[in-house]
Length: 124
Image (tube, rainbow, N blue to C red; front, side, top):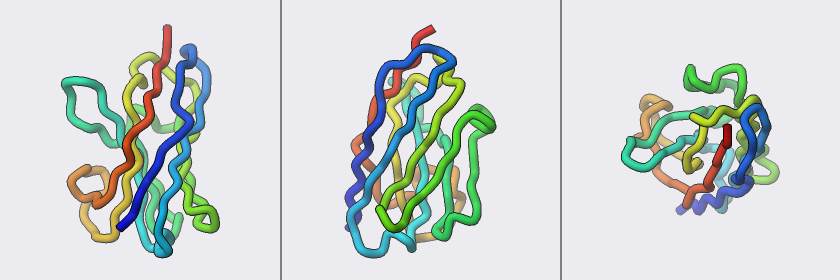
């Protein structure tokens, strides 16, 4: 069992930055691939970024590429999402997720554990 807890959301003006952090319980954190998804009311959960179990590969949605950076610190059991040049369309609840098994990293159903989410609001 893995428990994930996000933090760092808030209200920011367009063009600003936020850093989200997700801390995980469990002694096998370094065997999990990790990701961030986001969701707005009435829409499906959307892939944002992912990092594989050893940190060697990262993946980004086209909408955030060049603006967001995902990173992990296995010593602290954390995965962070640095978000720069934020846009109003980035407004959503952001969730971190983890998984052991394979499958496409951009697909939400392939993740085993989820955090409770943190709200990010970008004003224009």
